[in-house]
Image (cartoon, rainbow, N blue to C red; front, side):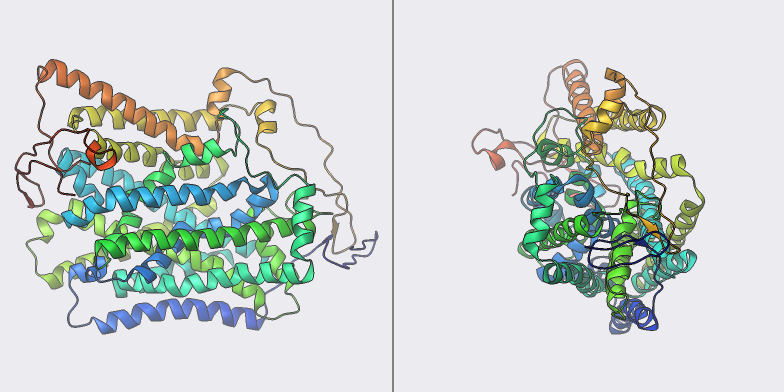
Amino acid sequence: MSASTYGECVQDGFQITCLTFYNFTVADYIIFSFMLCLSAGVGVFFAYRARNSETVEDYLLAGRTMHFFPTSLSIMCTALSAITILGTPSEFYLYGGMYIWAVACFAINLSLSAEIFLPIFYHLKIRSTYEYLELRFHSITRKVTMAMFLLATIVSTGVAIYAPATAISAVTSIDLNLAILSCGLVCVFYTTLGGMKAVVWTDVVQSVWMISGLLAITIYSAVNIGYDEIWQKANDTGRTEFFVTSWNPTVRNTIQAFLIGKTFGLDGYSFCVSQNFVQRFLACRSLAHAKGSAYMSIVWFATIITFCLTSGFALIIYYELCDPAAAGFLETTDQLMPWLTTYLFQENAGVSAIYVSGAFAASLSTVSSALSSMANALVSDFLYHWTNKLSEKKQLIICKSLVLFLGGCCIGFAYMAASLRGGILEAALAIPAIVGGPTWGVFMLAVFFPFVEFIGVSVGMFTGVAACTWMYIGRNIAPIPTEIVELAGKLEVNTDHCMYENGTMYPGNDVQPEYIENSPLLSFYNISVHYIGTLGFSTTVVFTLLTSTIVHLFVHKGKYNAIRDFTVTTSRIFGGLSREIKCEVKTTSSGKYRESRKRNPF
């Protein structure tokens, strides 16, 4: 047990009461700098290796030669941003073990991707997932969805740079501006030079840092405290509830929220059809390797989340007497874990830097993947009329220039986020969810519903984006009812023994929040964050099906209108229940010729 006395800050044991900051040592800075230099070095290596023979296909898709093993690690790194590495242990600490269901959600989505979407994308030999939407619907659908992807990715990438930089700079001596700049510049450097191969192999290196940082906390806690004691404390405080079920959408973490809300929301879009992930799959040397990388990444993802659970439960013991975030010593709960590492390893030079480097490595992975995918989408979906007429060398220069430009935009937004206030920053964070759910609905409709056509999907996508926008505006304006705050399930934390370094006790906060009565509209605005993307998905699907049915009956007079490209018919899923589908001959705006086919080729 730790001992604290007024007028003297004494720390004795694992329960923390002393609130003070610990600066990075020289060894910490060396390790942190080594990680950044190593990442940059990978880009230099692949740029030198391909200096005389690199093509656009090599730069954007690694020549479609990647093995499933490094690709699986790269997918895992992209799925686990720095926000996840920093925030997931705090999620387990504050809300209990239900977040473990994120693994099941990830497994479902990657399985859908491997068995349904990858065969389509891979055999079409496309570079951009949005090219499929032109083959299926219209070039306008392709351009609109790609533009939404570009907007959402620039915003989310800027936040992916800013958020971990803020959390880490707040608990170390690293300057915020330096943290933002170092992360952004290193990513832009190795992505511009080395292309997709540099992105994938740098992710492999960075995955070692990510795993090592979490593993250091897990091993230290298990050895010094004991895993049995950690688990017992988690059980005693109600954090080992893993099977919470409720159809009430305002309950924050339930099995339904993860398996339905996240699968048919932003996560489904991100892991199945987002350019960030699919581009990695398309870079594999065969469809079998692409599927293997998807399934292997599930194993890596489950491993990382398990480490996050263990370290998150360990926070219960460390912060049993004093939660520094609740005491106002730390600005956000995302800082709980990095501050703990600086405390635990203050006598072990360099160890805390491993965790900090792991968080930065996750940020580097997210940013580099975003830059590569945005450049690919811009070249493939917007600039193809012009770039196709240029030489290979000039196309490469354009691709690398786009990475530089987009990197500058993301770094600029990260600095902009540093100066924004809560409401504006919240709106920026909302954009990926606003566009992700509706876009996911468009892809699902394109694949599973042959009669859906351009007019229907346009109406559905517009209403889906409008519904999500309405939801986010309402969430920012409307108060949160007391009943919903209680349903969120945030567990109690303690600040009674918090003491600052000068011996001053934390005064505590006895102010009771105002009681806010619930209403149906307030409940709608305050549904679980996991269901927000689902709202856009379901709205898009419903309005698209209704509109397409009306067009089919009244415009086409009940005659079946030939679809424009491949769909997965019911025979692929259930067998023998579908009809043969005739595809019309089509030439896309990017010049790809589609032969007439009478059945699904997969």
